Amino acid sequence: MSVTDEISSHDGPRPDDPPRDRSDDRREARMPRWLPRAMVLALALVACFQLATWGFHQLIGLLLNVLIAFFLALAIEPAVDWMAGRGMRRGLATGLVFLAILVATVGFVTLLGSMLAGQIATMVEEFPQYLDSVISWTNSTFHTHLSRVQVQNNLLNSDWLQKYVQDSANNVLAVSAQVLGGLFNLLTVALFSFYFAADGPRLRRALCSVLPPRRQAEVLRAWEIAVAKTGGYLYSRGLMALISGVAHYVLLEILGVPYAPALGMWVGLISQFVPTIGTYMAGALPILIAFTVNPWYALWVFGFVVVYQQFENYLLQPRITARTVDIHPAVAFGSVIAGTALMGAVGALIAIPATATLQAFLGAYVKRYEVTADPRSRFRARRRGGATGGGADDAAGSAGSAGESGAGAPGGEEGAVPSGEEGAVPSGARRGGA
Image (tube, rainbow, N blue to C red):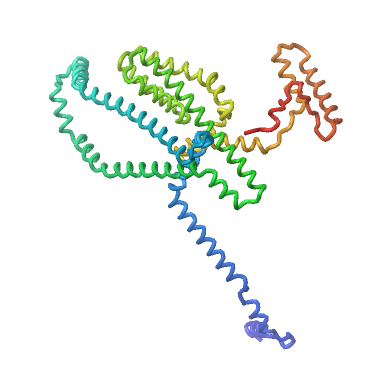
């Protein structure tokens, strides 16, 4: 027998093998019953996710406007509640608050616009003198023979200027569309914030009606904290803007810098309501305008801006914000950066009141404990107090005593410090409040 015959004989079924059931083969090849349903469910979930993502991207502008309107309504609700508590209807009270905001905004824009228009008119009138001075300096320095007529003709006939004018004319439609879009967003924010503030109690009742009583109390407390912190933020910033604006106005008026009222309002509002870089933006404009009058005036304005900023940071701001928005400067700076990364300029504006609200809410519900006896804090306190020698031994002894007292402390509170000792947390700080 050949090798091929032997292999073929082994490949075939053997006589002693049991007969194979074909139903087992069909059962193994059959698709599980749950698999089609799982595939349909997975496809439906993917489709829903894609639809939700598309809808979110389409509505992101509206959602940001609603968020801004909500925080604006929280900020003006204390004033609305104050007027409503004296018998005025909430709708009328909200309208009066918005009217005051509108008058202040129009006044600021009018003063700033008049200042800019005056500066532009002055630059246009004095442009020939500026050009003559530049030409004379160039001729004397580089031994050229330029004239004003020659320079003007070269500027008017230059390809760069013609291209710039043509591009500006083509962009008029795009700029107009952006301006109209900004006005529409502003009206949207104003409308939503008006309804949120005027119908605040009704909105809270509608929200609480779908929650159990225990959750209703938590929602109402969170709402009160948000109103207190956001309104306190607006109040404190507005008061500091008023003080800053008046102080800078007095200085500019004494120095004889033009447009002192507009510059004072600019410094006050921009330095307080533009996070992080507002101080530098606010101080740059009056310094430049003072420089056009007298370079020494610019130096005086710069020094006053620096000194006033230190006075505000270390004396004025802690006293005003102690009862309103008391957050650490590092936390405020980090919240502004995070808000800017998440939502741009809108996030930067609402980052500080949102962080203050979250901090107050956590402080109201997070339980705090007294600080245990820490020998390192005692050692540092003694070194700061001027103690010399034996510091390490005292620290070791304090560590031993703290360990012994912690081992025998009742109720599991190891090494609790009484309220009169160093390092103990005051009784008012054990629970954060609104």
